[in-house]
Length: 220
Image (cartoon, rainbow, N blue to C red; front, side, top):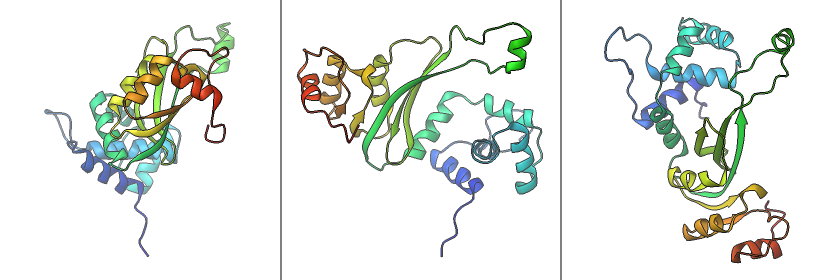
């Protein structure tokens, strides 16, 4: 019976598959390889959703002693192309049958309710960070994403998500906010069928009329 790989071994294999270097700094001491920092990040997201507990986990199970701020600062210095390389390596070359596109917003900070009460603040964030993602439905893998500091319409990011994806999905599921005639035409030109609920009073667009009259509720 084949033994399952540990999270540390998975991080090492994915790092090698992405072709990333062991160290990003040219000068200074080279003690902790970058793939081990990525393993700490995986431990944080999977087992110990707290920075201090993740650092203690690395010390107890992997015998690597670093302060939690050292792990966090090392991770924050990574450029965007590192995460893109890991994303491409994680997705691989397997075909994607159905993908989903959706957007959400994230607060720039997460203050405690006690702090908000002390400063007499209502807790609302005037300008959150917007994120639109393309996810493989069956494999539960992120194919591509786009993060904006200034929120705007989500439909304009769909071409970028499709072009940045390592594999082209056969179909895309989207909510009613993505119902747009130019967007449906763009996806069909790429050989991708789309399933999106149409807005009320839909009268224009060939593909929109098809979705209006023959909508697949089970698949959606």
